[in-house]
Image 1 (cartoon, one colour):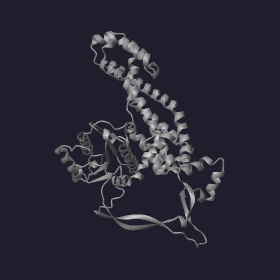
Image 2 (tube, rainbow, N blue to C red):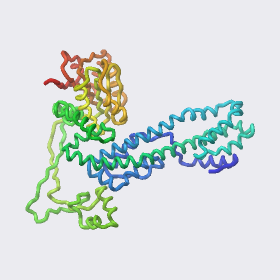
Image 3 (spheres, one colour):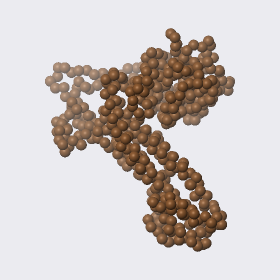
Image 4 (cartoon, rainbow, N blue to C red):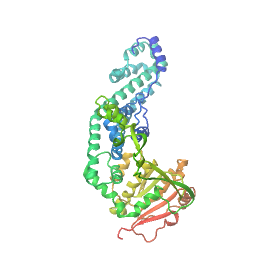
Length: 501
């Protein structure tokens, strides 16, 4: 909008107050985009435009691709490939935007400080400031001519409201600069991102089928490839994942951490539900009724006509992707519910916290065993929508939120174990995480180590006991032999891996 005098500018500012303005320096959290993607993967739901958020709008355009919809909704492998590729795109876009904002921090700070300039500094510095803003932001809507006119008199240069408006106009222009930069970044990444996604969706399922690789093994391995597909790295990580079969105790412990089986407990009784199917061989017609789905073999004739019709092909594709085709329902496919009683421990699922000893004594096979069970736990926590915190510890310790700090997670898997070990910082981090959220008290904590590990102070041991009394379970995975594991009294159970057995 053009404005040439103070009166018209004040009118513009009044109009601006009534406009919905999005501050481009504020991002949606990464978890928002993840939820958007996961909802699409689960239901096929494509959201509407996200009010000018360029990353969300880009995701919507990708989700509208009918071929991608079919692949994502018909294959668990393709759904995971889609989710990880899109989150990789989101991460890159957010990091680029954060870089642009950080680079401009001194400039943003300088503009705020200009409001506090003395009158003499305003007299001396206004022209250089306007010239700088004109050079940098005229193409993004900043109109320096108005301020040149207003600041041409001492009275104008002394108006606080004029300097405040200058600062506001700067931020408007800066937001437009960020928006255009992000738009260019997304456009530049779009072609290669979509090409990579399509290639992976075509090649990876074929590779898995030809090499007889299970979906479970793929999910664990793919989660640590950072969205990049190459057979060498996949096979290297797959060998680590398959150590769970070499050491069955890893799978047993993973199920315990995931609370998927709890055969030792009988604190509560609840009804377990299953299903049973029975074939009806002697009936004249197996058709029971009409249902909704995407079973091509059971389509109603009307839907078959749409499938074969060129004009209705897009409608058919959409209905297939959203599982809204009309299909025959057969008695032989109907499941009859079965119910039985089981005794299992009824406990709320809190987060998983996995503390991994990364000292020098864990180099080699112990390190890979630790990574193997961690791969399984990452997959379980993702499927169960549970928080997972990893604490890598040696002399120091560093916590990683596995589902929200993906770059740190990949970095953890790329470094070898080294140095001495000390459990104090690790237990302090465990305690801090458990205290950070009331729902975290019902957590599962796992310490992975050779347990050549000095015991911690009585204060921290008391903290462990406090959390155990509040439904937090503490487990250990001892890799290798130790003469006497001093941690035994303080953990609910220690599982052992015999490296030479």
